[in-house]
Length: 156
Image (cartoon, rainbow, N blue to C red):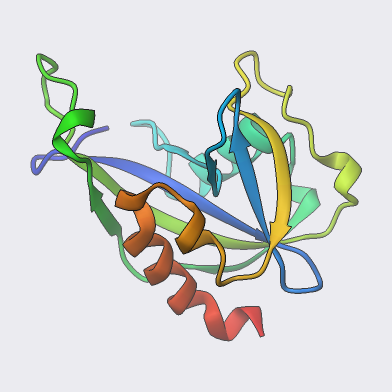
């Protein structure tokens, strides 16, 4: 779902453990790390999309997590020109994201990257909250910082 300005609606998921560490997932076959995220379908709310993406990407269900927070507004990033797919209508110039902070209630054995037919990740690690903005691809860094600043009081 791309809005009139060219931003695709999306959800981002920050999954925390009881030690205050955050789950970073490794893109399949790459040395690229990120928080799980995914597009919002026309018939979905951001909350519904978050639970769908949580299952597709991490194999987790609603009973495996507790929602601690949601960003108060959309956070946006623009794609660098080399990543914009030309010839598609409407043209997507970036993403606008609603971020969710979740606490993992289940054991790590509940993580299952093969829950979806087309897995996106093949690895994961727990990191401190200051690591993700330095690890993620450069054009997403400000959005990661914004989400983590907003969620900082909930991570303490």
